[in-house]
Length: 250
Image 1 (cartoon, one colour):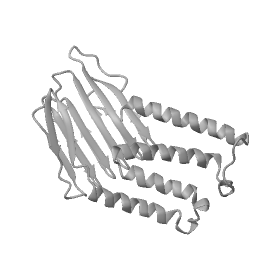
Image 2 (tube, one colour):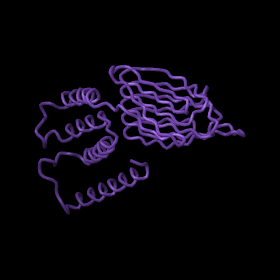
Image 3 (tube, helix red, strand yellow):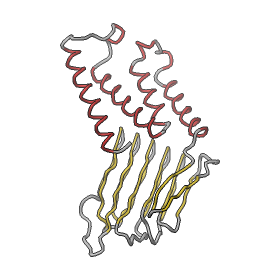
């Protein structure tokens, strides 16, 4: 889903939430009696969880589906009559389901168009607790880490695009040895329940378009870059859910 479409969907949901809260407090409509003990804060968190679930269903990110569902179960434990299994049983079940679905339904293909050519990158997920990497001569770089940690040094001499993914893991990626003859590079990030640190050259201009849902993006790169004649523009986009992305200068 494009960033603009996401913004419109989230905006509509937030408007609906604001209107619903006002009408609720004005007694225009009433929730069932079983929902009476749920606070306004709980309702707000529930709506955020629904938005997160919708986003992650589109992206097929299992951790971003099952964990928000577990949080919804905890919020509505009394109306649902499931106090006996909240909070820890549902949280543990959500984590186990995430791991199971990642194993059964892996994202096993990256599909990209680069420089007018058509590329398919197949990734080997036989070992779910290891990393997957690829760098080709056309300037496409891909690194993926699940349930572990790794450090990557991008040395492409014609870097145009990078796909980086960290799920339940930690990843450090250094771009100071990469060359960008075209002057433009696109970095796509996907961080779910993990951490990712990107080390960006101080001469690159960074345009950060990352969307964050119940996570954090520490951006120390959008300002303070060195202006050069052959300026490189680095566009970073993607999503951070229940994780942390840090952009650092090197």
